[in-house]
Length: 42
Image (cartoon, rainbow, N blue to C red):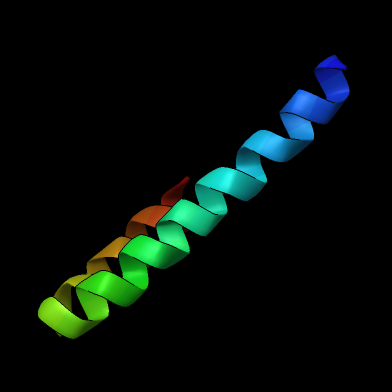
């Protein structure tokens, strides 16, 4: 159960990041680059 939770958490956070990215893309295109850079640092 612990392994399943560990596997599902990154997926949901990745989905949230992608949703956030697509939203920011429409409103602040320049912030997409900043978000991608911060994701690479993680």
